[in-house]
Amino acid sequence: MKKKLNEIRQHLMTGVSHMIPFVVAGGVLIAFSIMLSGIKAGSGADVSNPILENLLSLGVAGFTMMVPVLAGYIAYSIADRPGLAPGMIGGYLAGEVGAGFLGGIIAGIIAGFVANWIKGWSVPEVLKPIMPIFVIPLLSTIIVGSLLQYVVGVPISNFMAGLTSWLKAMSGGSQIVFGIILGAMIAFDMGGPINKTAFLFGAGLIEQGVYTVMGPIAVAICIPPLAMALATTLAPNKYTSQERQAGKGAFFMGLIGITEGAIPFAAADPVKVIPSIVTGSAIGGAIAAVSGVGDHAPHGGPIVLPVVDNRLMFIVAVVIGVLVSAFMVNMLKKEVVEEVPEVEEEVDDLELEFDLD
Image (cartoon, rainbow, N blue to C red; front, side, top):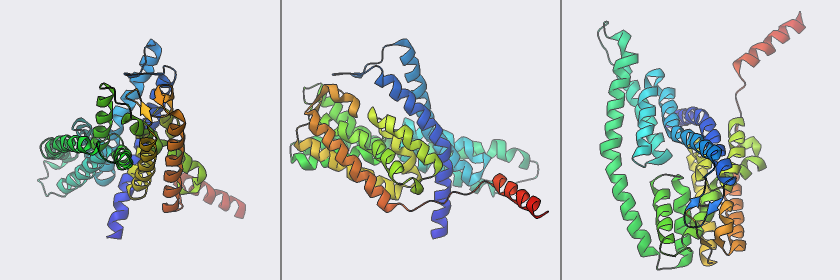
């Protein structure tokens, strides 16, 4: 069982390592375009400059590729090249049905194992040359795509509707509990159905003149990426070199409220990262809720400070949430030992032989 879990983790790391450049490039481009444009009350990011609009479009394109690349390379790690197409298509569909990066991980794993299963079929010699380039990708894509469209999509839609009704019922109760719930939902899947339900609920209330729901959400939105940026700085030995680079990008994403900046860390180690960022965001959301923090824009992160009510407590809530998440995840994680590339090992061997001669 432990061996199987280690194999799955290795597949996840392969997907994450290929996804990180898309997250960093897309996230930083979005961050710069919004930071240089600002936030407008009632409408959120106000990007009107043509050059900044182009940067924003490039960033959005990078983010659009994020989940398909994650799923594709998870499948590639499992089944080699035949898994790439069904994995990427499955990841794209996961985004389309609102399943987020968690849906992408599931799509990649299913695509990889389905492709691997079909690879094991005994087929006539005449079919063997076209199996890896035609038969396996085609059948795997049909299976994975059908599962996501017909099995995953409808339940997620119904689930989001049920969550929205539940949030409406909870909004009249304890503000502490409500803030905890909102913060936890925002951090749990970072752009997935649970995150979107909470965000759209808060954004919808802005139009009705209610800003104290979006306040805790705006706090929680930036905590995961800022926390992971801090965590990689405080304990760099617990993260790979790629994750440390992703931490730098996550800092900029956190400043403008892009929760997805923490996705590479959550995808690589969900058991340790997700509970940590959920805890910090829940605490931050609770502090903001009881303090009456309000946000007049459907956006989050420190960039919304100009349109925030009770700015001091907004900052306090963010700082406490970030510290809790960063220290918690670093307590849970162990040191990582990165493999030395084979090329370097060969060079070392040659140098040793030279010295001996």
